[in-house]
Length: 227
Image 1 (spheres, rainbow, N blue to C red):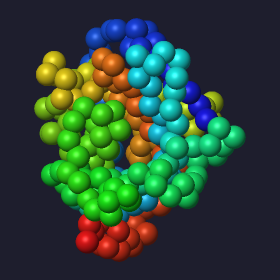
Image 2 (cartoon, rainbow, N blue to C red; image 1 turned 60 degrees about the vertical axis):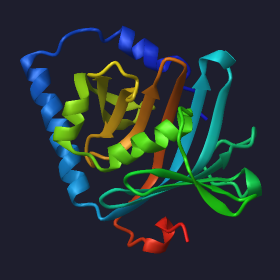
Image 3 (tube, one colour; image 1 turned 135 degrees about the vertical axis):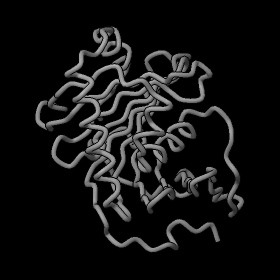
């Protein structure tokens, strides 16, 4: 487990500068690279590690491990469960009713209730709900849409965990309505796939680490069915 507590605020505080012309070019290069990559992905899966931090809970960081499935252009399935205290590697633990399942059909998010054996439309300001909705935006990455929502303040090269070559993008939502979180995105320099995404709102912060990404595995449509 790799706690990201307050990391978002530290990075933003150390990067409050305007992008130069060359930096603006690099931003466009990275964003175009991401879109080109996603244009060639029909479906994908990955092991995901989620960390949530609520400012009202002080130092407490909740950690979840699971799997995420993507079907172009918009469908996402996320299933996860709380990570045991002894866990050191991301894994989907079979914890029965404590296992959470979400499906995003491209327009709306749905949650499965094992106790009631049915799907519910999921609304609200829960940090995980916001995270799932935001992942749907990341997976269906569109340059024009992204740039209409966000101002990418800067981009820089960074070796994530000291070994993974990434581009680190810092993005601020143009609207102050609170609908979209502030973002840090670590994008792999070779594949242009997301390695980590940190989404920060006033009261909470969510970090997502993507492991073992499998591109175009030929996923079944049934994975995204609520029947």
